[in-house]
Image (tube, rainbow, N blue to C red; front, top):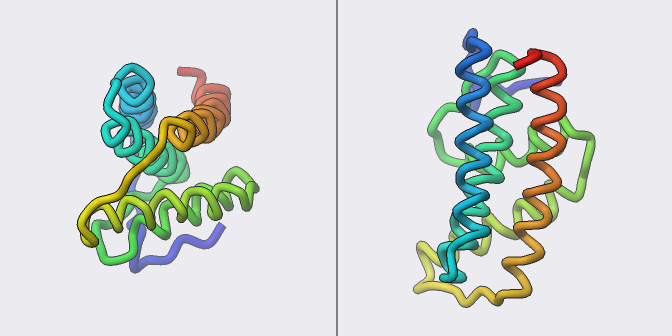
Length: 138
């Protein structure tokens, strides 16, 4: 795996820090599942996706830098580490939708889309959790 130094710095995370990153991602997904507002569901699902990537990146001894384009790179690395091109496709669709919401006057997200995004991120987080927990025995 090639981590671009522009987006990722070497960093030695403890098992506890990696576990905290994972729990943070799972917490966001839990909020998305429970909240009734579709915008909240969508935004928390998207942050859970990013935090899943951050968890795997930290597990691999890197820290994401807050720089232009870092969300794209987090999604790209997550897809590479899990060997799943679908993560890039749907993850970047979510990112684009989130950007439209922030910069283009808002979006409308449907309950069907939210269900699909939640299921997608739930699957990813299951894989991340399995990978991290089995290696670190947390």
